[in-house]
Image (cartoon, rainbow, N blue to C red; front, side, top):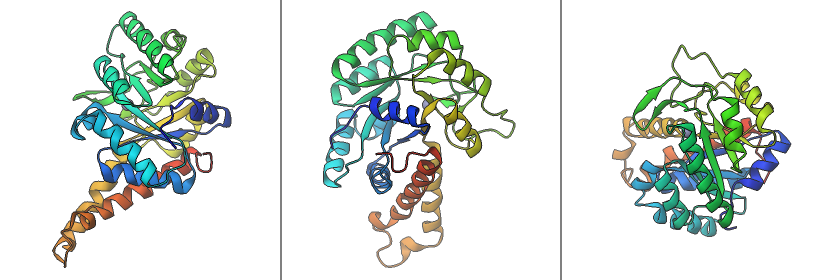
Length: 288
Ligand SMILES: [Zn+2]
């Protein structure tokens, strides 16, 4: 199946009260692990690519080439969207050109008027080309491009303004944070989520910073209208942990254990297990 945009899968998720996971990719192993797990579990999936990861993987065209070829070679039949995560205005344009099926334009650091104008322009382009587009209102805490902040709560009125531009899905800050949550984190603001949902109706809402939010909060957020959840750090942590174990046990020094296909295998398996765990919590298993 060729890449699809995220609209249909998220509309179904919102109506069915479950969420589709966005799992960020960093290389071939990451992509393979996520695609195979989605296929095995018959779950729709969104592959997220940050601008940094896009650069690391030698540019967006390389990413599109790798992902589309892998879908074909691995006989992946579940819906897969290839999505730019936290795109800049310029990055969004590059991804549209390279063949991504979905983009996020993160204009949350602009004054609301400028966020509004730039989002509007990109919505028009995406609509014309059949791509889905995610916008962000209220910056999401944690480390985003080197800047660390506590989770902010979006203004429901501003959310409505951006939603009305015709974006496909909306990321709104509800106290969530990128990366690992600090000990004193007060939790998600369900009050804010409820107020946003009341203003934005059927619009699928996106929860960023899915790493370390307790499962019961995730389930409550889904019940209140979240239908896309982004997971990134958690896969990185389990990959690193499994790789460390392999090396610390000296397995790279046994026989041909230094072969990268062996060295990276435990980390790849760890990502698969983590993606499976998340898809089960999100309720997207069997929904493809
Ligand atoms: Zn994010």
